[in-house]
Image 1 (cartoon, rainbow, N blue to C red):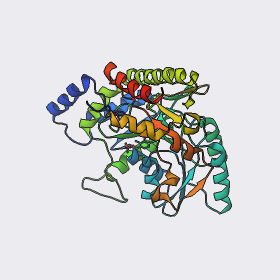
Image 2: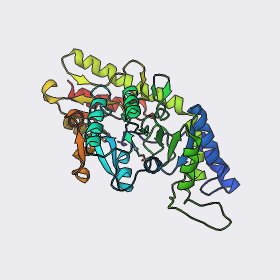
Image 3: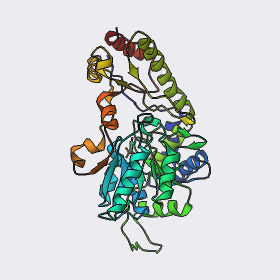
Image 4: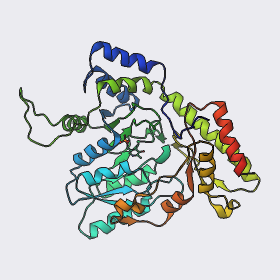
Length: 379
Ligand SMILES: *Cc1c(COP(=O)(O)O)cnc(C)c1O
């Protein structure tokens, strides 16, 4: 039986032709017309914002932190319930992360604890350099409250939209709400370039500066002249061609991911009517999720002893990939010394949460295998 993956790449017909054209033109270099073209396409999507395409989402967060002026010894606030890529770049700058708990109705950064943390740090004479909220699994964070706090204390927002391309918060597209936004085109994301990312800003000078730093900080001169440290963080022209083909499919992919969610929800709704208590996240008013991954919470006490582990194992036995919800950063060994503000919301989501197979190229046979496993558990 072939393995059903959590979120495999799903390429269309166009990408290979675009890559062929790049080969024919011999633009096998970092930078080139496809990089410019991919940036223009993304700028059109994020109407009015400016975009730099980069080697990864992690690189985009690193550059955003540098652009915020983050220096060794500084502090940066970050949502705890996220993928490590949100938090690692804080340490690249020599700064310390401060982690914040989640709200249970978005799973994202809790604005109340965000403000408590800021007040605490200000009292200690430490003003955080940036706030990194995440739209986890595609569900928007409560941005209005986060922006209010960001303005009140004048701390910029780096919006991690790595999992939320196509998600919307009221009339705004996720990624273009904060002072800086970042995207990822890693292989498991809703669209992919195999690996890649982007930085978004409404300020063109920010984006120009990001492009400068991402191409080894070359000062204008006929020879290589450098007055500061740079990075090799630019996206390659070959990869950008894949991205341009993928971006055309985004609307279709969002619809498929949302259809996956609806299908699971209808199934669990029916099970809950029989006495189970399986939970999922509904969209609050004005929230639009791309439903990148469908996630559920199963507490054994309320579900006849069925745990997240039991379901995960049952899937594995049938060669189907599911995955526990991301383990919060404040619980990770590598961040054991980091400050944390909150209670146990993120921890409890981690303890009971499971990400279900959410690819957009699943066949009816794949679905049958998935529902057979679920039927064997939720009898
Ligand atoms: C994938 C991801 C990143 C990192 O993006 P890469 O392109 O893999 O470096 C950062 N944050 C979140 C929430 C992610 O899911």
